[in-house]
Amino acid sequence: MMRLRSLLFVPGDRPDRMEKALGAGADALILDLEDSVAPAAKAEARRHVAEFLNANGTAKLWVRINPLGGEEADRDLAAVLASHPDGIVLPKAEGGASVGELARRLTERGNATAQILPIATETPAAIFQLGSYAGAKRLAGLTWGAEDLPAAVGAATSREPDGRYTPPYELARSLCLFGAAAAGVPPIETVYPAFRDLDGLSAYAGRARRDGFAGMMAIHPAQVPAINAAFTPSEAEVAHARAVVAAFEAAPGAGALSLDGRMIDRPHLVQAQRTLAAAAGG
Image (tube, rainbow, N blue to C red; front, side, top):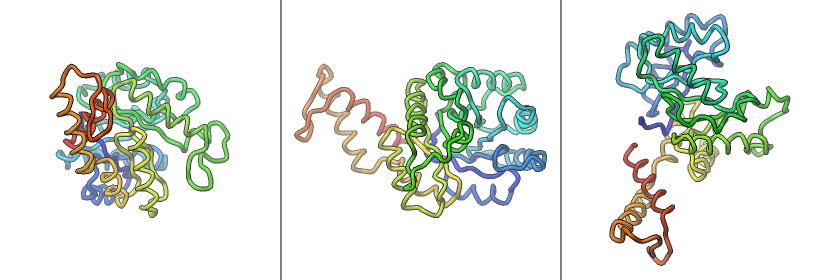
């Protein structure tokens, strides 16, 4: 599975920004054909995205298409699939059935390789499908958003004055996290809109990793270094994880062990293995 610490959105109608984004250090770029592109510019954006995909075969490039329910999605797929994007970001996803439908359309058009990253909390119905992604074909992860859902339910905002989410949107975030874990794929944290507030971003990304998220989306190249740093285990974390693994390898039949004066058990081993996998880029 490809590494997805940082995924940087780039408007599909801005080829100049696509070129600059290549140097940002993101694990993947998301070339956007949905929200950042005005309806009148979508045809031109598809052309730019296809050309950029054709010209950059080594970078990890994803395309966010328009929602499956409208005609724009099929136009997006027709325009970009021949250029072999690494993956498709699916907005307004409503459970594993949405991913299955997109996978069917990809296969129908002769694409056997593109993975799928659903944005899984953008409609009220989507919230009730977050446990349904297990076994979905081509599923690369699960991410969420806090912009469309408040509008859909008539909320004034999804955030407290200090920037933290109000309870309904904390719930959506939590369900995304658990839905990804249940499906066995990485949970990806949503964007941090205040792109000039790098201290706030670092704190936000740190909380995301603490809670179990494996990566995060970005809206500006300046956000990428802080996101990569937050989702890359430190040398101390790696050393501790190696010590945990070594302790259990030395006593394979043990259920619990003592390490550095503290008790550790099997959940600590699972977390240590996950830390080492993240450090290795897996």
